[in-house]
Amino acid sequence: MKGLAKALVVYYSKFGNTEKIAKAVAAGLQSGGMDADTAKVDTVNFDELSEIDLLCVGTPVHAWNVSKPAKEFLERLKGLEGLSGKKAFAFDTRFKSRMAGSAGGKVEKKLKEMGFVVAKPASSAIVLGQQGPLEEGAEETFRQIGEELASMM
Ligand SMILES: Cc1cc2nc3c(=O)[nH]c(=O)nc-3n(C[C@H](O)[C@H](O)[C@H](O)COP(=O)(O)O)c2cc1C
Image 1: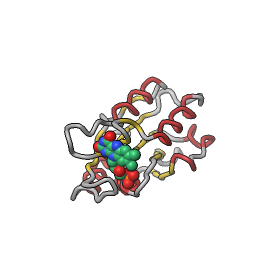
Image 2: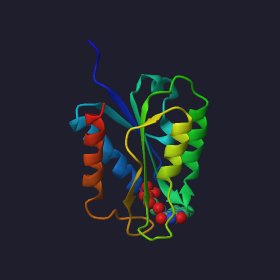
Image 3: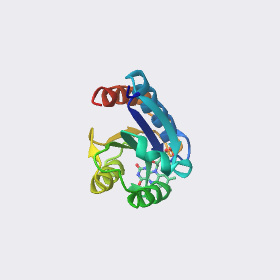
Image 4: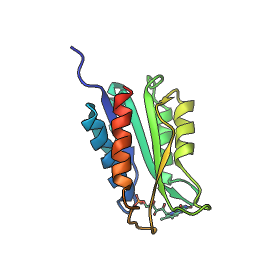
């Protein structure tokens, strides 16, 4: 019998806010019935990526763009084979300002170029200051996104 569908939520977080969102997504994926784990960009076991069905990638917006550690992770990912057809979801954390810029859409584009199938359009969680906190309800919103993603698998 085939085991549970597997998901990995990879994230970079300087101050812990993106980490909280990553954990919320993973909790939602689990309550939706998936085998879900989280990993920081610098602790990802690239050998195990071939076993996953869904990859979620989260990053804070830094200088209107994807954070450098998340960019580096994506560069390494690009070199791997066997990712085509797997599902993906990207998210970012950023200010609410119109001038905040974004990163999730850029991550999503790169994942698409690698052959991933976007399961759900990228979303942002809002932080109230550079070090947080997250806007009220952000973790619950992303837990629900996790459940929704699990229901699509
Ligand atoms: C160097 C740096 C640059 C940043 N640039 C932006 C930016 O361009 N737009 C934005 O909305 N937030 C920006 N921020 C705020 C981050 O989005 C915020 O620190 C982040 O969401 C917090 O997530 P973390 O706790 O996971 O690091 C910046 C933060 C840092 C440290």
